[in-house]
Length: 250
Ligand SMILES: [Ca+2]
Image 1: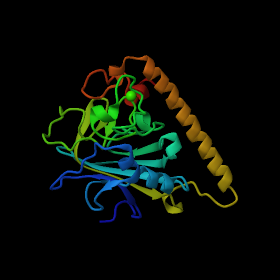
Image 2: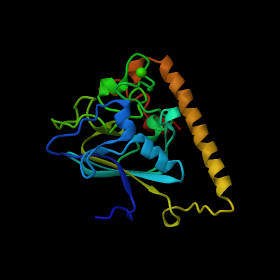
Image 3: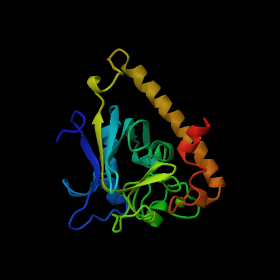
Image 4: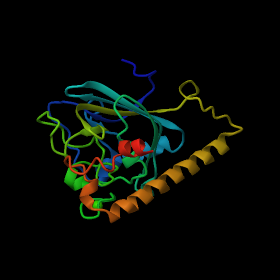
């Protein structure tokens, strides 16, 4: 089946299989990639960086909630920075019906694994605590690389695959797929011609830098707050700081 015009490269996938892939892995695994082409997999941070640093990429996330069925989220901007900057994630411009669980907490974050803690939780390693590598904040609003769920309930623990669809509602997922595609003219209203290519790229770089700065400021604020306020392991304390709450205030 062709999804959304086709031309996508899958960079991450979760689904039920005979033996679930282990996603609680070290930096080198997440850097180089692991899993099976048609099964559970992670393409690798270096490949994601190499693909996305040279052009404008969009991301599509397809997921299946055990009760609510298929949901999706699309982002017009997706980029993974270089290893020397911790494979930092830039993601923006959401549309879809799954809710935006990625851009607020995860854009601007460095990647963390079992053996490399680059998250914003002062007193713990989110990758160790949540058992999966990710662009953790302190710790997450989306956790696609968590443990595969064994008991399907909204109250499953924070180590499993989940997506906060709204401040009140978590999606508990049995399927999750992330795929990227270079933005083309027919997928995008921004037409980059050779004449304005440099201008366009520098303004994009500027805006993503600003975005990163914004998030770093929020990150500093996070460090000064109680860790557990930003901890999504359970249901405690989340409603005060989720992006949807902020949107409501704005
Ligand atoms: Ca930490």
